[in-house]
Image (cartoon, rainbow, N blue to C red; front, side):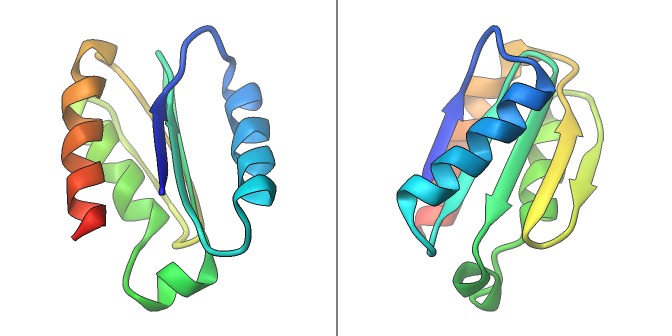
Length: 99
């Protein structure tokens, strides 16, 4: 599980970062990177089988910041409207995923 708020990265750089981390962390991982304007998540197949969904994760984070987002169970992107709310929602999401 890797969840982080990032700064000064474009949406493309965040997506590249997700792919890099995915390769470094191995086949079984949940990765969430949230920047000032976007949030991106990638979930491996093993966690998808356990009911974890990248689209649901991104949707929850995006909605908490006043934006929208979603996607497929394995990869999703969304907007961030109010980045000041990221710390709180990322902590909430991390706690849920650890359960």
